[in-house]
Image (cartoon, rainbow, N blue to C red; front, side):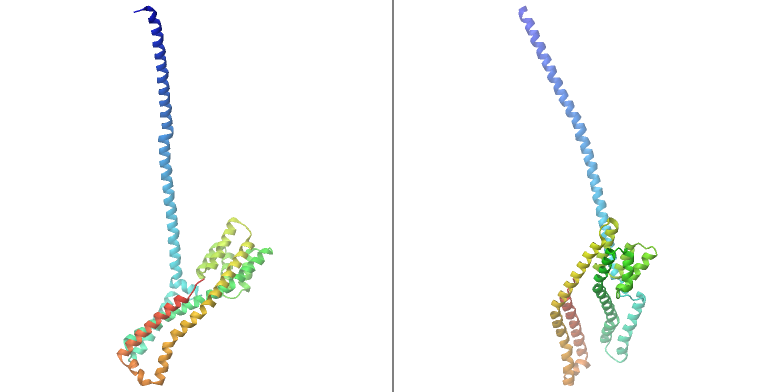
Length: 327
């Protein structure tokens, strides 16, 4: 081989080897950087993302459990408000549930036992016992609760105005509540007296208002308790908040009166329709007693009377539900 070609060939080979070394080192450095980046980002990120996902799932489960507990507490509270003991408290009656049940049983025995001893049919006696012994006391209890709540809502906005004027003139909230407890009509007076007495012995105002809501389960009382709780926890203008609440309560009262006026015609029609059959039966009995004798004296007539009475009661209840608008 020519010696003149050896030196250039060796130099060219050295250049190629040096280039390959630089290229290999660059590839290795890139792979190392990629591996480090993968190690720092990929697995760690996946691990942290798993932990974060797990933490988010636990947080979601905790929120769902807390919401479930709140729903169960609300359901339990509604069940307690519908219980007989709670309804007696809402009617402001001091008797216990056992006493009310005993009175109902006694009325049922008297209403069904006397006609049975006089020789009446047992079906008629059973119907009288159920209607007068169990239906009438509970109807009277519901009427008493509705009347008391109606009186409360009629004067509750005025009580809010007393608090607003007192707070704006510089009186503390406790003194305003005392003024309501002394000068407002019933049942506002007695309810706020219980609140003032409870607060005077150290019971928090939130607990006193919660007990008031148990005695008067109205949304107006809940609004009032919510406004006071928010004001005590976050601060703010109590007079303005209660003034807005008083305006809302007056607006609800006006809307309730409008609905009552619009439903008056339907209620009158329903009352006439429900009263026509008994009135006609009484008039026919007076005008032609022989025509109605079989209805009063035969078993078939008694059965027809019971069926007619059940149908009349069902129809009256349906009409009442249709025209009873709650606002």
